Amino acid sequence: MTGTTGLEGYYSIKNNKKMRYGYTTGSCAAGAAKAAAFMLLLNKYKETESLMTPKGILLSLKILDITRGENWVSCAVEKDAGDDPDVTHGLKIFAKVEKISGKEIIIDGGVGVGRVTKKGLEQPVGSAAINKVPRAMIQRALEEICSQADYEGGLLVTISVPKGEQTAARTFNPRLGIEGGISILGTSGIVEPMSEAALIKSIEVEMRQKVENGAEYLLVTPGNYGVAYIKEHMNLPFSENMKCSNYVGETLDMAVDMGVKGILFISHIGKFVKVAAGIMNTHSRCADGRAEILAANALRAGISMEGAREILNTITTDEGLTVIQKEGLLEPVMGELMDRISYYLNHRTYGRLQTEAVLFSNEFGYLGETKEAKTLAELLRRQYPCYTEKTEEKEKKT
Image (tube, rainbow, N blue to C red):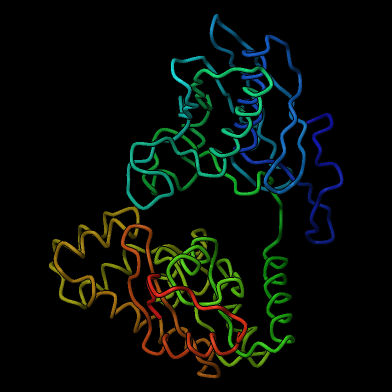
């Protein structure tokens, strides 16, 4: 990519080398949609489009392949992943914006954008695989242009990626039940290349800060799903949580070294089911086996061979749990899983700190917890005396 993008001066360091930032497919889609709407509603030509990302970085995006009809305009932005090894780098993300009746802004996917076919993903079955943050970015960008143009009618935005279907074959989309193309992704709008060592170091820095400020017990989530679940459903100081990403083992090792007394993990089952098999790096490129682990523990709990085979053919953990629920074994299967998660967490630390976990899913909500999770949750609440308890109508599982 050439020209000024707004990312000049933004980089991370990997092996003493500067790794430049890029921008997500979500930013490309929002930038292209904004430019197309501008040209359609204001009847002016645009070569570049500015876009403020959720990260707070203002992008300047080059607009390509402009075509127009009587009531529509289409254009593209080329994906630049910076120095991150991203298979979508160089793809053109198109947005076609057309006037429609009504006053609604409708966002959909066209050629090369995947379609969700399985439950348990961020978007519902049947929807285009355009995630929540990119949808919000597109919506906000079009509302801005509509305001400039004093336009109060409806718009249909169709995002397409001509080479998206072949590119998706090199991603996990087919295994996740996303068919026909790539996903339009991004939570910050920006791609930040970062080495594994740097990510682990950032976890260490945050943990050390908490310990040095008096924390003896830690509330840990792999990512944003866990944070949201704590906030909405648990009587815990969610603002004090820290994220371990995929590095469960390294997080435990660091906690032992720093003298932490206990860790309570709150996790989506899609991540932590792997821990039930002793897998301590939960990234899909390191290990998957989710269906196999679910099937093995379902067999221990008494599921039929037919049910076990059905689990092995599932794509998402929620789909596997649906099979288990059909045979009325969800609770005993979760009991098997939680016992094994407890064993492997304790084995990693050789019992030098208390390790507990609570698991949930987007489809089923609360699923299960290790035996002393409630005790550790109470210790966390006592650790933060300024924490104000939530009202009693909130679901309290620990």
